[in-house]
Image (cartoon, rainbow, N blue to C red; front, side, top):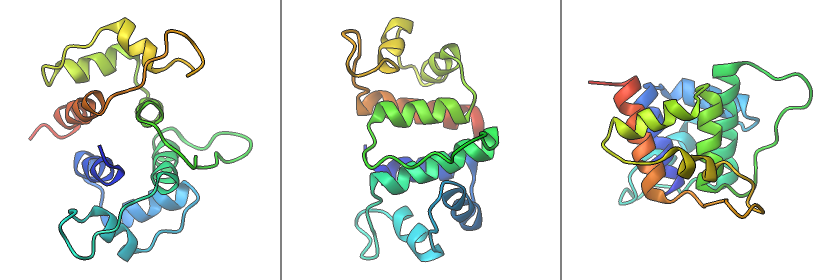
Length: 153
């Protein structure tokens, strides 16, 4: 799943305007222009399409966390240079204040069967034996589940 697909999905699910998108990037420490945001949201076959890098998506997700949960005391989180599906899932879990059951409910709402043990393996450290990488299919279905919950029509 591309970073642009994730960004488009989140924009649709939470019905963010261009101004809100720019504000979320700014909260995450990135000054993104309306043109940049627009180009990131375009489909791949559009001549103005631009791929969004991991560090930019990380800034957006950090801004989303700050908007939903408020600023944390201390140093601002720095956007990661490299994002895995596991990190994206974790950031969305934090932003939306979700428990494991909430994530499993979101997956179940789109008829995607996933177990509690499988889910906990996604949130482990990569050095642990039980760690499992989050596949695109899981993230895609989770984003669809968020649409069902936050934008049912």
